[in-house]
Length: 193
Image (cartoon, rainbow, N blue to C red):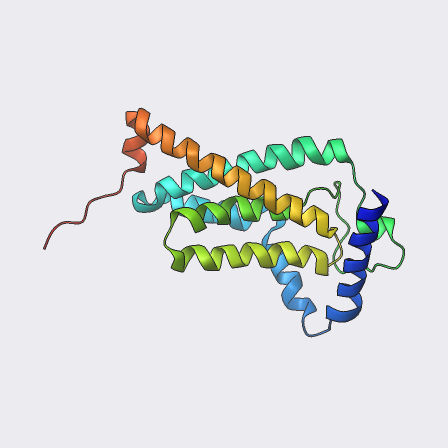
């Protein structure tokens, strides 16, 4: 654990000393708050569910985020009980408000990748790539503002991706078996001209 802490500390210190700037901080703070409580991703999921053409993707996003929430916030955070880097290392400065839960893994990263990976895998790339890029930016912003260790972010992203792949499999299985699920997730066929 000491080697992991040393690795995490060196990266966070490098970010603080080399990347932080008065010009970048407002933008990065805005990006990090996009992930707060998963509100952005929840709203995006509701929009996807609202339209028949994207409903299957929205349902997969919902399942994926629920998996990520349970695995990260209910199980692992309380089991690992890793304190935040600003409480562990005296030379790290916090940019945003203190967080009220444990550090490992990053809930922002889990939630962002849970939803974005589904969209990346199930939607057209012109929608999937920007969504995945936003997830990466939210995850990296957690390092910049000083509330997570790099290993927290990596673990959160991995949990999000695994949750997304599980959700995709579930949606595929449900669509083939239950008529009601096929009906609510079916896409309308375009009328031929």
